[in-house]
Length: 427
Image 1 (cartoon, rainbow, N blue to C red):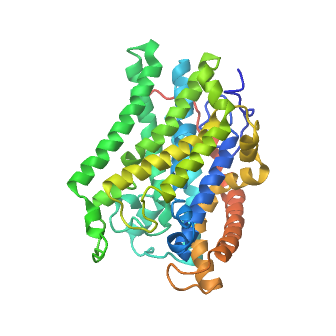
Image 2 (cartoon, helix red, strand yellow):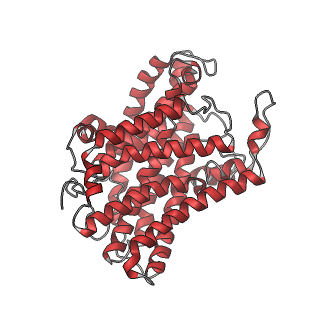
Image 3 (tube, helix red, strand yellow):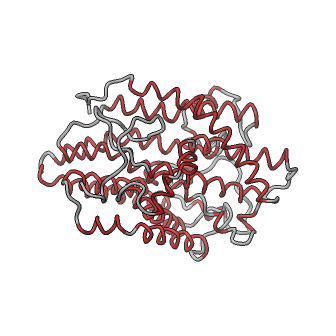
């Protein structure tokens, strides 16, 4: 196997999001660094928003569109979570056991989230909402708030993406089963069936948005100069922002990388084009930077939280996904640690931030709000000094995330092998 598909040796690491099979899958070491970049972008986005710098500051557009970090997370999940399924499919082996897969995903998401949910409520308080009814407990602890028009933005409001991830985890084994079933009729065309499946996911995503927007173009109620509507959000707003079908294109882009990566590994030699892709990581990160610059500075996307029109949403989703796709390429193809980009991704400080990035993502917004209002006295909404907030809140968040990882996430993940990984006969 040549450099284009060579990676770090397999290792059993509690923060590794690869879904293990009976054997240890290769660990794509650069992905910890990618998680650090994604988490950092989201932290800067929220700090810029809360202080107003992202809305009014010089080059604040670059902070205002840091929510692109969520797209990076979705592509990472699409790649790492799907790769064991597609690798086994192409090599003719059974799929990972569904029960073990869901068990490991649940251990990765829920315990850390539950601790953060309780801790943020008790220490910082939710910005809106609370635990007042049984429905509140069921919704927030079950990560189903994105389906509730009255609770979707309450509690740990950035946790909407975790709810989307959960739905992807539930969907993926079924999707892999359908692809395998179709491919059995044409065993020599597995790659083609896999590719058609990904095209179908993108088509469903586009059709989903168009159908909901045709049914209820909710953004017309939020136009400039119009009074902000009161009461529950329309279901169309939730369906076209948070629900899985609306984000299938992003997951599919990561799954495409998983498909190509598994195909190259399965054939045992690297096609010339893939070899070239692996040799120019600087090109892909340059394109990622250019795409992000364009989406932030030249695409006409708003800097504040106003609903996007249909065309704006399509453009933003495409640009964010394209940026993330370019960003992932050097971590997927090429020898780990070769070149300054891959060395940066595995550099110990960056990799460490990626290791604890889940805790950073969970805690950062509440910490930013608390530091800004209670420590720095910035009580006026969307106004304040950005740099003291990001330095103090960022440092405190890293400390809390470190405790979360070593006291909660890592110990819990020791139970990931409780169930056998051999596929059951059910799916």
